[in-house]
Image (tube, rainbow, N blue to C red):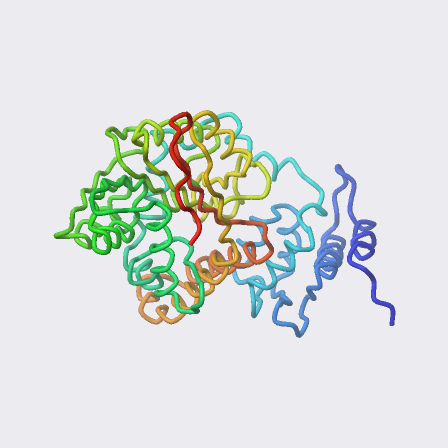
Length: 397
């Protein structure tokens, strides 16, 4: 038997693609999707753990019309299933299936508001807090580590989530060269995990800011008795000068229209000899929007910056001292979160239905697949102020 190379498989699949204005009948849609999946080594009703079982043929039409959004929503509705959603997404992305399905206006128009309007303005910023971060502290804490880190762990010489998250916190503190005399600004402090770790282990003072009422309420109790001050405010309202600045997992909510503003705020708040560490998910190409399913169900108006967008925003303000890619560690983090979520589900199902469960596991597993396919990255970027002649800080440990 002759094995066809991947590009040859795609050439065969492309022959079935309709022209831009051609409408496909349901049976043709089904055949096309099956061919495209086969080119990604995914079989409908096949035996492999990444193969999908289709229970409702409406799945094919949804995939053609709404692509990523249709894939996620039809999973939530139970129209299809897969033993390893993470592996299925990994193979889809690695094969380049998204570029093989013809564009349609209905899909592309979802990105129009991001072009025309600032979806992350001060008036709209609270939307992400109320939709996601204020959802339910017990839900998040059921699958996170002891320091409640809702960001990538550092699985260096460990497979344990708690240890990996402590290693991440230790790494951040080392890169910032934190000392007891430092006053640190934590932009987007979550449930206060970094603030507690730095205050306990280093003895420094922390000013931690957030717009999530639920997170701030929890964090104040979590850090009680430590030199940590919490402020519920937008980053654009920040004042004062700090020895060090850290922002972990918040820049994804800033939006491309505000990247420069964010950098100017950080620059204005950092002392001349200070160090700024930005920890953010990033994408391989510059975009002005995020995955439609993720935007609708998980992170409203979220946006992954590219290296070019971050570099342009920092230009003339900061020296980029180090750019560390921890992407593969996020795959492991997300898989650990999903295991914890599944273990916690018997208690969580008292408050959430089966559709919510499928939504949440699709979120965690599809993200794991995206990091595994190297479509998404996680960066720790160490910066110092331009033009001050500060010696380069030690960035790698």
